[in-house]
Amino acid sequence: MTIAVDFDGTIVTHAYPAIGKPIPFAIDTLKRLAQEGHQLILWSVREGQLLQDAIDYCKERGLEFYAANTNFPGEEGIHDGLTARKLTADLFIDDRNLGGIPDWGVIYQMVRSGRCYTPPVDLIPQEIPVKRSWWQKIFS
Image 1 (cartoon, rainbow, N blue to C red):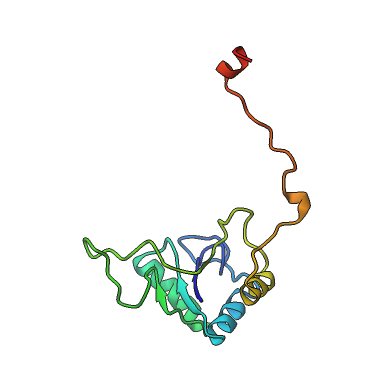
Image 2: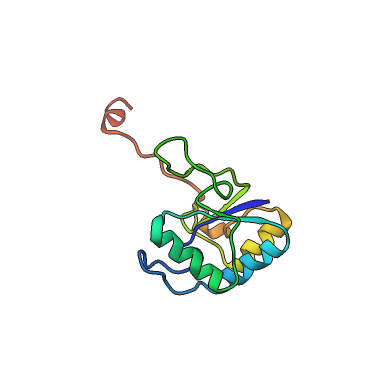
């Protein structure tokens, strides 16, 4: 499986453009997924030296990615030498997911089992109120 992984807020806490503190078990979980044969792509808003800093941070901790901000090593964009920003990954791990990012132990179990994250029932709204426009109020 190809897994695209965000950096800031997912592997480390938010401190952009600096590198934040490590999020517990993120690096270890990703290393294990790589050892199990998954292809990991670093998918980040970081570019240039900031992206290289993130790559180096992970590499110093024993985590190497198949590619960074591209579908495969050496991929180039179709214009102005820009890299592809649309990845073809099977799974995206990002703190900006709807509902946030679950614990890395939960993420690992989700990947292993092929199951989706289900938030606790008390976090799912039971009834979503319908907001009506002023003109709908006049004609109702």
